[in-house]
Image 1 (cartoon, rainbow, N blue to C red):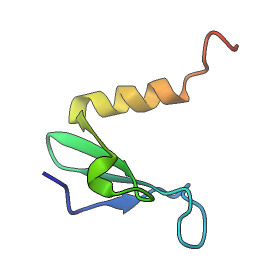
Image 2: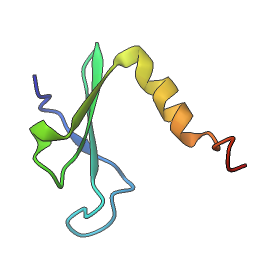
Image 3: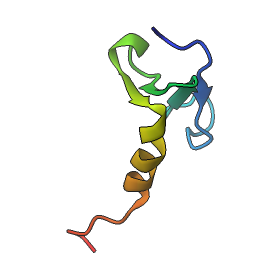
Amino acid sequence: MTPDNWRRSSHSGSGDGNNCVEVAHNPTRISVRDSKTTPADATLVFPAAAFAPFLDALKSPDPETS
């Protein structure tokens, strides 16, 4: 099922959103897609409880490069 409440990241850039990441959520899952590709082909779906830890991991420094 493709969510219909997609929101564009505030970090997507100006203009037509050349660096666009979109997120949609419902009570049980969070979906993330790159709007430059066919949305159905590029959607990641996370259980809602796993999304915050996923974002935290992205923000953490890489121990191999620190």
